[in-house]
Amino acid sequence: MPIDPNFEENRELVDEHNGHDVWGPVEEPDTLGIHGTHVAVDFDICLADGACLEDCPVDVFEWVDTPGHPESEIKADPANEAQCIDCMLCVDVCPVDAIDVDAGRQGRA
Ligand code: SF4
Image 1 (spheres, helix red, strand yellow):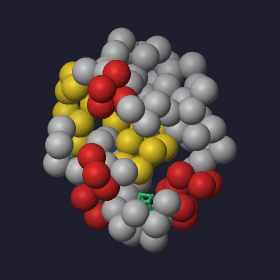
Image 2 (cartoon, rainbow, N blue to C red):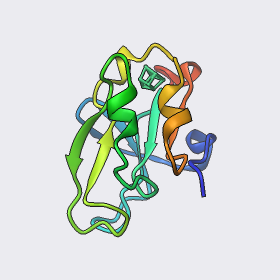
Image 3 (tube, rainbow, N blue to C red):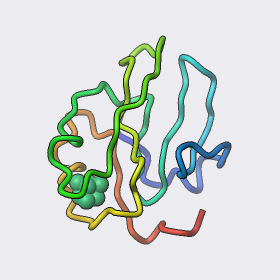
Image 4 (tube, protein in one colour):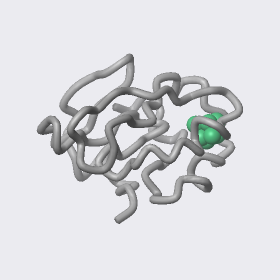
């Protein structure tokens, strides 16, 4: 199942991590929620393919450790989402549709 592009309406803002929002539910280590708002990564879908890290022209993503998560034990964290130039490469290359990018969400959280 791809990331829900309407997560702002369907989820609650529960935390902040590395300067970006975290949208619940979060119940570690199995359920990690969505990280980011402008550049949103569903950590529960991410399987650490790495294409987004390789392809992002402005290095928005960084690996974070998520030991014990059933899909993968590292995740592509949108640590530098403010740098995003909305090229949509990451959205296109993600094999499991874990990423949604929408500049309209910037700063609304
Ligand atoms: S849309 Fe482009 S610039 Fe923004 S995070 Fe994805 S690959 Fe990087």
